[in-house]
Length: 93
Image 1 (cartoon, rainbow, N blue to C red):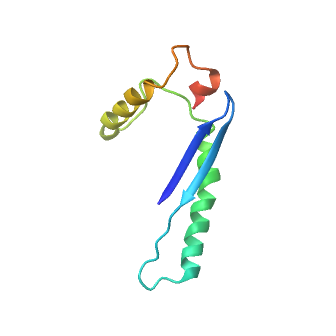
Image 2: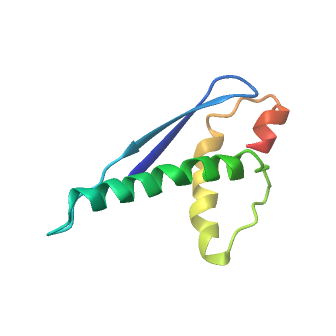
């Protein structure tokens, strides 16, 4: 399991914290687990590069199968938004 937690620091910065939980498959060697962990950790900078170029779209560009879940998530998340219009950084997030 990979958990990536983000905390906005200001209008331009976000702290990113990652937690990785790997269980060994029966008969798996320690070297295999280490290799899997390194592959997962290498993916984070690639994800950050994608996130740095995201923009807020309303409505979002989603596959039909994704729509309902994301609408519920956005409706819930909007309860935490201030009434003021979002900053430029928030629109990119």
